Length: 568
Image (cartoon, rainbow, N blue to C red):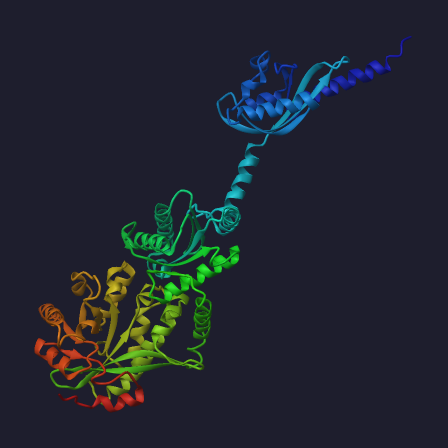
């Protein structure tokens, strides 16, 4: 009798090992000491596409993708020869030519004399995992819409640039960019075309800088640029002017044409901040200062901006409750018929009775109203209040008219409903032709189908449209007829010098003649002297307003002007 228990156990173990080898989802390859393939398992074929017959006797390097350089393989084989082991990720190529990533573990089996019997490689395909990890990393560091680095990437980039600048003594500039009234584009053309514009803006910004500079999107309509090698303020201003011009060029958005501008704040490292947060904050303050200058411009950070912008932001917070608190009021300025001297219209002008800062004109808070979207709610209130007041005054002067100003931001908003405004006139018993809507040339320059429909809805209801500051913009003359403009208002900058400047006098006369040919009436703004009034009468101007007649006054003070006749 022979005890074959041990042999049976070994045979069972060998059979089990073979089953694992054959059915493992992890690829296995056995090579000799020189990397010549001895055998592979089926999982190897599944991953690489090569069968056993195609690889036996060939070097395992046949799988090389070419991604790794010679130094990589030298380091790997050095470790294998020294320790017998190596583990890491490597890019190889399948039989069909497709590259894939594998997680590879190499171990060595030795003979009794210490020589290499074979090397065993175990690997799995981690291509999808790597791609998934790369997508997650990309999404965490890049903006999905524009493909630009995001806020996190900007922060990391700034930290790296600061570290380099500290070691080399170099400087760089951070530009904080905010698109002006971008909400109008979204509201009037829709978010899809707004997104298209943002992608075009990103492309233009990249075209304004060098490849070594960083352009990032912080979110919404805010961008940042980190520019190296900027030595002085002249170079900062040159770069900012280049960007302002590039962003202001028209955008083709499908069948629509869009216009946008940008406000830029600039802060330099290390002069304006020695940390990432401080530098971004100060560039942001400078950007708000550019907004206050009228948008479509830039501003370089100065220490005093911190206090000024703080006041502006507090003003924006106060404005959100001003309407409910009854702090908004209307002042009125007379518009006088130059032939009769009678007050025939009033222009309603918004004022804010601020509890701490006193009486404020729109120039102090209109930017905040537009940026926060409060402009529509405030504009609706102005229209309703003006209509209510007009109803009272028409009881004394049945032909009296009222003019209300409406900004491009109001027209662009989908919250503006012309039917609701017309309904308020009906509620107060005011005919539509008694109300005049005053717009700016800028609105006609950047007109969308939605804005055009709203203008036509006003004119179709019998309301006149007045075009403010005529001659200072670039509006197309056909628009005057398409949108039934009823009044042209000559800007006060032309009226101011009409007595002593033949050029300004000729310009005013030309506007009046053109308006007469088109069947439009003309209102001259900013009339302050009898000489200006005389020149306008001689030129054939229809109406005038200005301090010669009255400054804007409250409703009670205006009562005495309704029946007044202004004589020479």
